[in-house]
Image (cartoon, rainbow, N blue to C red; front, side, top):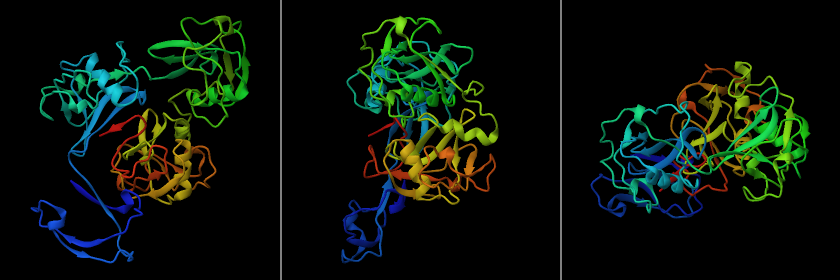
Amino acid sequence: MAAYIFSNYGESEVPVWVNDVQCGGNELHLRNCRAFAMNSSLNESVGVGVLCSEHKQLRLSDGGSPCAGRVEIYYNGTWGSVCDDSWDLTDADVVCKQLHCGKALDMTLPASWGPGSGPVWLEGLECSGEESYLWQCPSEYWGAHDCSHKEDVKIMCSEHKELRLVNGKHRCEGRIEVFYNGTWGTVCSETLDRQDAEVICKQLQCGPLASIEYSARTFGEGSGRIWLDEIECISHESTIWQCQTDPWGQHNCNHKEDAGVSCSGRKITKGQPKSEKDCGRESDSDVGLRLTGGNTNCSGRVEIMCKNNWSTVCDDSWDMADANVVCRQLHCGSALLATAGDAFGQGEGDMWFDEVRCTGSESFLSDCPSLTSAQPDCDHKEDASVICSGPELSSAAFPSTPAGWSYE
C-alpha cells in the first residue's frame, strides 16, 4: 500500500545488506527480485519499511478518554466506524478487552458523542466474547453495510475516568468527585495534601490551588462509592489517576471526610479558551494532547484539542527540543526523532501552532513560544510528528495509535 524510508520507523541498528532492490511486482519472495548486495560496513544507504492494506487498528474517539467513545477501525489506510446493527454487550466487551479498558458498561451514553466520518467498515458483528481482536468476530464483509453514520457504535468501558468539582460557587471549587466503573464517587481527605490538590486543579484547567477542604462541612457529603484514598502525587502528573493511590474503592473513610478543593481559576470554562491565543491551554492534559498515526501512543502526528476539535502543529522550526516536550508531557520518555512533512499521514481541521520554539524544559507544549493562528503559513503536508523512546514504543512506529488504541 505504501513504502517508507527509515524516518518513518526510526533508524535500525542492524546492518544494511541489500541495496537497489528492483522488483517487477509478481515475485513470490523478495529474494527473487533483482538487487545489489553490499558490504554491511557501508552506511550510505538507509533502511526501508512498508505499510500493508491489511494492517488494522482500533480506537475509541470523542469520548474524553481512551476507554470511551465511538468505535473506529483503521483498515486499508483509512479510519472508519462500526454499524450498530446486531451490536450487543458481548461485542463491546471484546473492544474493551482489546484496548485494555476493562469491561463494557451497559448504560446510556452522552448524546454529545457525534457521528464519525469515512467508511463504515463493519456491520453485523457476532462475537462470542473469546476473541482477542474485534475483527476476529464473524461479520459482514469489510465495507459491506446498509448503515449511515447515525448508527455508529459508541461504548464506554469500566476503565473510563472523569473528574469534577461539585457544590461550589463555580466549576473550579467544590467536593472532588471521580467517575469510575460507571459510577460517580468521592475522594477521602485523610492524606490529601497540597501536591495532590494541585494536580486536581491542573487537570481541570482551573489555575493554581487556593485551598483544601478536609471535611464535608463546606461542600456537603457525597454519596455512593468512595473511590480514592491514600493519594500520593509528586506534582508532575497531568491527571489524579496517574498518582499513587490505594486500589480503587479501597479506603477506611466515610462521607464526612469527603475532600474538596478551591482553585483560583474560577472564570476558566473547560473546552472554551479565553481567546484564540489561549487555545493551546486545552492541551495541558493527557486528554488534550495526543499522537496519532503511530503503532503506539508514543509515536505519531502531534494533535492538540482546541475548541473541542483536534488540530495539528506546523513543522516549521520543529526540532528535538519541541519533540522532547511532547514526549515528556505524554509520559513517553524522551524524543528519538522530530519528524516532519506528514510522516504519519495528514491531519484534518485547523493548525493552531506554527514556528514552535521550545527550550526543552517546558511542562506543556502550550508553554513554548509559537505563532498561534487558525491559518498559519502551513498546510497538512507539513504536520509535525514525533517518535518517543517509550515506554510503549514498538520497533515499527507506524502508522497509528494514540493512547488506548490497539493494533494487531
